[in-house]
Image (cartoon, rainbow, N blue to C red):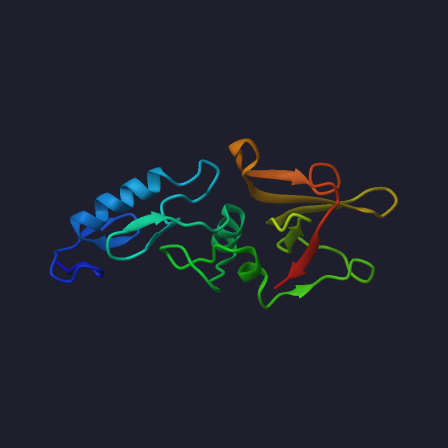
Amino acid sequence: MANCVHHGGSKAERTPIGEYCAKCAEQIKQAQADVRAHVTPKECFVTYRGGQLGWEPITGTGCAHWVAHERSIRNGEKCALGYSVRVPDVILGTRKIDREKEKVQVNDLWRHRHPNGYDHCGLVVKVEEDKDGKQIISVRHCSSTYEQGVITSDFATYLKGKGDFYRM
């Protein structure tokens, strides 16, 4: 059996995010219980802060974390399993789509920067065209509104047609 990464003299036990000592395992369990209800997946949305602080929920955004898991994005600050937890890190290295010149496609990323500085993102899961050729776009995202979790929303209505699209 291996030793805990953070407490080298302690034998490790299996947790949902790796092998850690009993002290870490208990702190991980508590931190996971404290993760906000809408965050998906919850198990890895924790981080080790060190020393007396131990394990805590991440202060990143659930929407970025969900997209990062869906698209295997591993930039910037990461969850316990190595996936991004911040919107700017999720869109890092992507290309902004000029909707005047090209159409949005399934698997494109959506990002909206609210005037108050709040960032939100999601993943395009469906694109149709109406009789006039206008795109009808559905975005799947992890919503903190009313602690909904992962939902699919119409870009034009629920998301009010706001935000930009990016392609990897």
